[in-house]
Length: 97
Image (cartoon, rainbow, N blue to C red; front, top):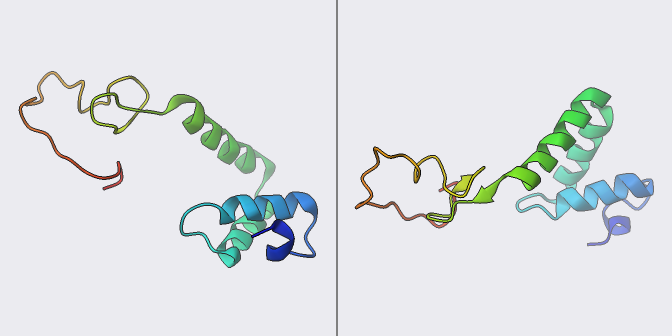
């Protein structure tokens, strides 16, 4: 859905942010609008922290080479644990499972 379809009267930066939220899984156009308007009303410092958190995840978080869990290093905390029983594994589809 194009930004103009979601918020036809919105300023272009607002429409772009609504569209960006709408591309996230489970976020429909109304929730995308609510999130956008919440960010607009958010104090500048909080908005900058939010943006930095997103960029931090993109810059620093990778998938563990062993199990594909989220990690800041090649191996996640679980796989790098020397006390772990390496003869057993837990298989999940996604890290949140």
